Image 1 (cartoon, one colour):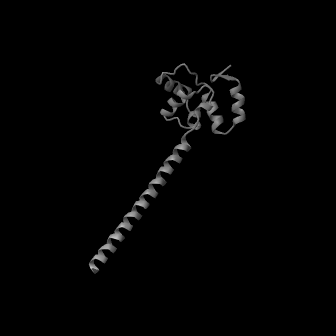
Image 2: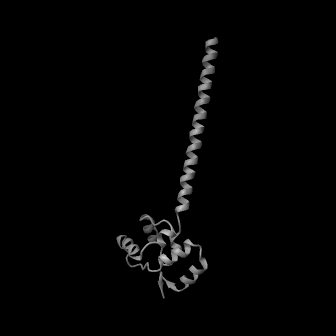
Image 3: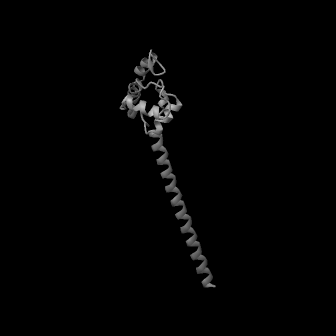
Length: 125
């Protein structure tokens, strides 16, 4: 009878250890997924805020690794044009995109609005 009590106690302790281990692993997994999500949200920007860039072009640029206003601001227009050509969207004119992206990156919304007032499809009117 004492053997049954000890066996039951041992099984209970093992069960508690397993439950605690599972809780620990689930807790760490949730922290990792939150970190990954927040990293993604930091990197993700709305490139369609730039006059001349629609959802298709934004997706194409993101696919090519252009995931920030700073990255676009530093790109040569010839490089942007090459990405557009590769994606079958060569008709777009990226001439003002780096300038617009630089204004967005610097938070200069008034200056961006003023510039965009003179643009049509990303081109100077």
